[in-house]
Image: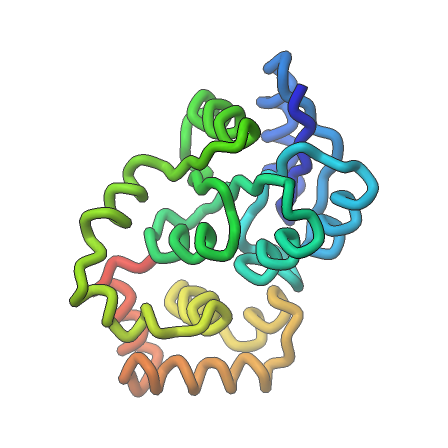
Length: 209
């Protein structure tokens, strides 16, 4: 039996995942967390066999949370379940210590297969994302400005490209608007863009979700 901790800030997503996994005899959801701090608490209290983790949650999340989990519980495999299909996000998650990456639009059968594979010590990346990681990461692409952003800058960059404002981003990430604005200024300088319209066009041009 694989005991699973679900980390996602949306109650409907957690409930849906619990229902899907309840139909599988060898998988059991032992705890749910809606933010990074709860993830760490349940890891200590519930001792799960696998963490099924969303990349975007309030406060500690994404790459920062993956690194924190790796520090506190290095033996627990992490399977990222994300809305982002962008290969650079998957690459950053794997580099931070995740054992697998799959998107939320995947079929339940694919998710179950990924969970089983990762729980046994394997690694899993959704095939379409793995293909982009392998064949679209040419030396020229690896030197593109967005690949030089820090993990936090990249996270804020994607949220800005999605049309979210500084205040809203700050609320989601538990950062002050001033801190978000500082990151925004730095990442825009690194990308060589002067305004949000240019930033959105950059994201579209490079197919960054």
